[in-house]
Image 1 (cartoon, rainbow, N blue to C red):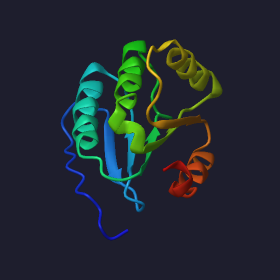
Image 2 (image 1 turned 180 degrees about the horizontal axis):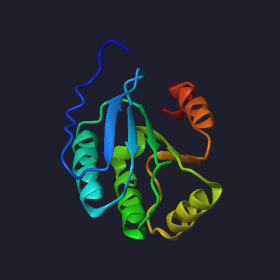
Image 3 (image 1 turned 120 degrees about the horizontal axis):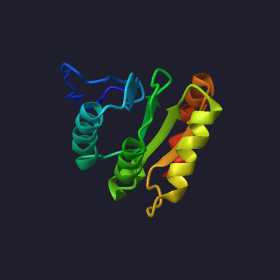
Image 4 (image 1 turned 180 degrees about the vertical axis):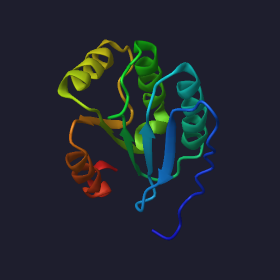
Length: 140
């Protein structure tokens, strides 16, 4: 893809995630923690990108290194990905175990909002990438 939007992500001390641009134009997030500082920084970054979303996008959240999943961090992610702007996002979330995946699904099922983003949770990064690589046409 030759027309990639600028990433506009900057690392800051104490932030437990990094972001890189995917070849397909989406973003790869790798989280090492879900501290309040990390979630606050991520929400601001993600909101800025949602504001000017102009095409279908594939994002991957790699949370396999995260040891603690605060419920408020999960609820923040659910709220943000429920924004109508998120309807243009296909999001694969990769976690370390099925127990963690089930915990995230449980919190998501209690949310009042319906996901606007198409979100799938995986424990295998290759399965997540295979799902992300499917044609976006069928999701338009």
